[in-house]
Length: 430
Image (cartoon, rainbow, N blue to C red; front, top):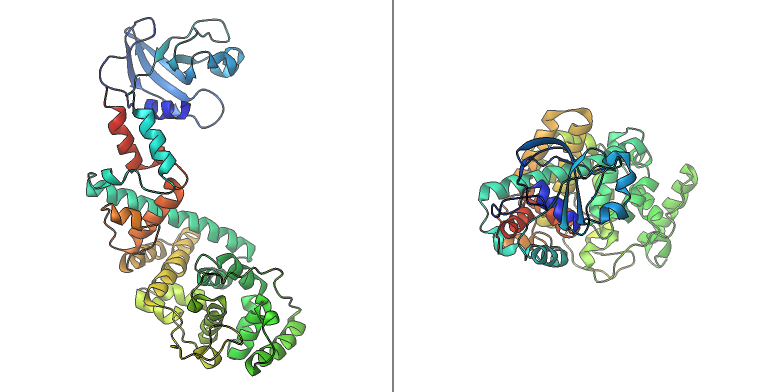
């Protein structure tokens, strides 16, 4: 409740009538509510408030009950000496500063059903979209500005992750792009395992043997732990094992421990085996992934880099020692290629631009997202079903950030849609 009161104070969400006043009846006018403090000390710094015609400058503290002032020990804490107004819901005690002087106090008026609307909003935000009915009523310009801001927020979060990886991999951008690509090929469910595989199988080793597809496949399958678990009745598996034993001895490699690959309730085309085979094919087609991605300027350019076809054994198998199937050599669907373009090409371009201060690469990342079709999944569907337009991948990335970072985290107070929803109820005096 206290956080909700801080929100109402910060955004001035009190009704215009009745006029604000102290608990003893003197008029109050808020010139500036102050700057929200997220650390220790009063809730708002440097507020300016007219009390009975006299201008005060100082801090504001907010509590549900006035007596919380004493329960929290503020009456003896010098950090609270500059508090000029104590804002409360229940006026159950007069309060004093550490020097014994009395602090003016006022109750914060608000719509009686405001708390109920807030509770309903945050309680259901993780599993549904309680603000869906209000989305269509919001000006499209506001929605566009918010989704674009969220898309940038997501890009910068990813850039921070890439920066950490860049540091871990000794500032080798080619390895950074290789690991990022591997993680993306896990398509969420196996992303962690693919990242572990890429780190356990350095690009420097793969690059030396990129002209030999069998060697690259043997290294990746051997390091993944999947080769060890495969039956030895297949000639292809046997050839992978022989090649991997040689490579492992040569480079001192050891397979991943407890890889935990996930395959339950997954379509065969999404099994990690075919994704690993695709990663091998991409490396075989040209190991300099990062350089090629930076040069790519359109979705078609990215497709050329990431859409290597499967050949040989993987033209007819979903996993090692799988029965023969008539399969297409194209390993990824159109939608999957778009997802890779978002999670690899646009992410790498933006992160590289952010870390090296290249405005051109950041611009290219945004233009690539604007040229790609929007993602349609369980994260974006609630918003598009509610009427929020989603025309490109930049917008869908914003919607995914909205769902993950705000709805599922119950951060409705920090969401512009949630703010408009709550503001309407806070200002309705009933």
